[in-house]
Image 1 (cartoon, helix red, strand yellow):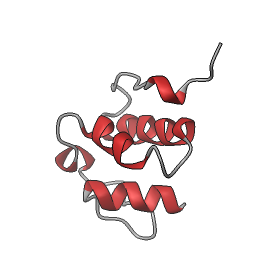
Image 2 (image 1 turned 120 degrees about the horizontal axis):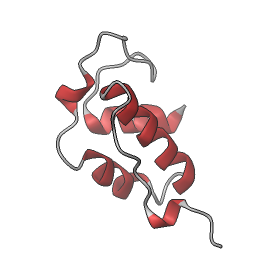
Image 3 (image 1 turned 90 degrees about the horizontal axis):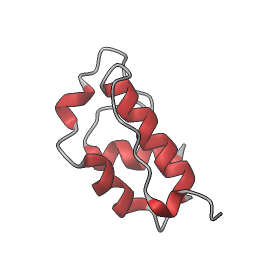
Length: 79
């Protein structure tokens, strides 16, 4: 939950201990390139895979499921 709170704070999304109201206009707080910026900010502090998962989840919430998948190389397991 710490990661969620840190990401939401970084993005300026109002929340209550990591949970935002369902009627929150998330898109208003998410400028172009927000996933990349948040990923760069937190990738050294949190699991890259977990961070990418959460950023994709947040993007889906903000776009009613239409966001494209964000897959930074560091977040995918080596083959």
